[in-house]
Length: 259
Image (cartoon, rainbow, N blue to C red; front, side, top):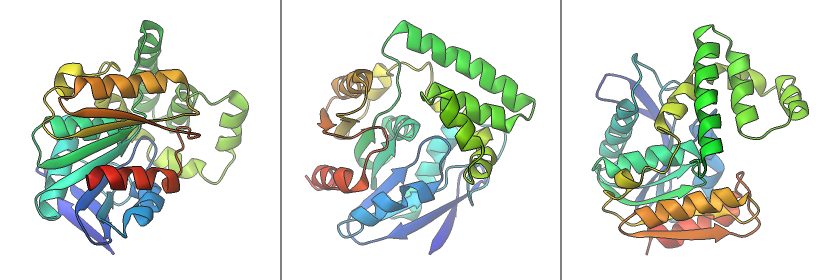
């Protein structure tokens, strides 16, 4: 059953809770809602009290201008408070960057795990991220939501044929509906580099994951995240890509969150 809580600035945050056990909150990435994390939540619900939520500007959650990354951290603070005052976090992709920021901010986070946070590991990738930010700001400022989605898919490595196929698919309308939140994910990523000093302030255990079938730079980024944390660990999930399978991921998270 969907529930709601209210963030510090009055924004309504919608969430769904399932299972029993220690509290775990799943944080989705770009162009996604809490429903995107539902298969993983189902795989964890036999051991945990699992919550998925719509980040602000998506799904059933509200939005309040002006946006700031701190507001999304406050959203998680309100959510954790509503769930009992303490939780472990798992974030995927840019949702992992938000989970790291929340843990670094001093929220009552027991453990934090992230999967393939897209931090740049070389200057060329960082420059590509800066160019994307400029073009995304222009597209959204002109109301060109479809073009904004295309920019993101291109940055994510999709070819033109796949992008045009996505435009013709039934999913496109849903992606366009949350396109303004692409700017939020971009803001969460900061300067696109691993925020080592911020991660160094995370007091709880941290697990950084990457897929064995993903490009090597994903592995390098996960390793750098773990290396920056006082109590960090790093693991590769063999055979997995950025679209990690819940059945492979869930046992790894279960072991980490119950360690």
